Structure formats: C-alpha cells, structure tokens
Amino acid sequence: MASITELPTGTWTVDASHSELGFVARHLMVTKVRGQFKEFEGTVKVGDSLTDSQVSAVAQLASIDTGSADRDAHLKSADFFDVENNPTMSFTSTEVTADSLKGDLTIKGVTKPVVFDLEFGGLATDPWGNQKAGFEATAEINRKDWGLEWNVALEGGGVLVSEKIKINLDIQLLKAA
Image (cartoon, rainbow, N blue to C red; front, side, top):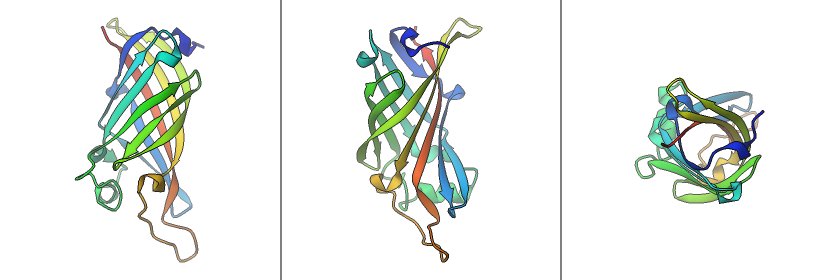
C-alpha cells in the first residue's frame, strides 16, 4: 500500500464529483440517519514534509441531503445550521501526520479543534493523464460544541437526535497542473 509520504508536493484540489462529505447521527437512540453535503471544495498544499502541508475546505450548508426534504429543511433552519445567517462551514488544518489530520472546524461562527483519523488510499493516474490521490478521514464531534443544541426528550428516556455526530470523508484529490 502506498504511503502518504509518496504524495507529490504542490497544490491538490478536491474532486467533488468523486468525493463525499458525509455524516451519521443517531435518531430516536436506536437507528442511524446518514447525510451529506453535496456542495464543497477543498485545497491541499503538500509541502516538502507533512508538517509543511496545509488543508482547507468549505462546505455549503444549504446543500445538505439526508434523503428527507422535511428533515433537510429543519437542519437548514435556525434550530440547527441557520443557513440564512451561516451559509458555510469550514475547516483549516493545524497539523497533518501520516495517520491524522488536526484542524479547526467552524460552524455557525464557532471554531473548535477536531482530529480526523486519516487513511491514505494511494495514488493513481486517470485515463486523461491527471494525477489523483485518495483519502478517507473520520472524526466524531459533539454538535453542542458548535451551538447545534436543538433536541426533543423522549418519553421513555433519551433524545430524538444524538449529540455525537460522526463525520466521514471519502476524498479524491486532483493535482493542479
């Protein structure tokens, strides 16, 4: 398997058509609801070493898709993301290592540190000669840390929506010419 240290230096951009910015939340404490943001972009600047590398990304919160128009509308409302006043969430790295990506995640004007477990998928050249790289990254956050506090207590105990949210990234990068 390829090592992240084999990633050529330079600027790489997220190929959004071959990537996914997803999340998972528990619903009613018994099932999982999955969703994703359909519109996002990101840049990776690979330095001479991993410590010299930088990652930045922005997602359009109005592009949320959980498979339910009513749920998506609620998530876009002031109860959650308040997309009218906070149209994006962003991430800026503070440290890149072979197996982790640390950085600052900003949602609704609140910035908190997040650590992603990072897995390098390897390098490939597509049929058109473009250099590509693949990554998977996962993190778990508490949505309340970003002011996403809306919930409903359940009669039998527990809450409607979990506080813990798993973030799952499946990213394909394109090397800039």
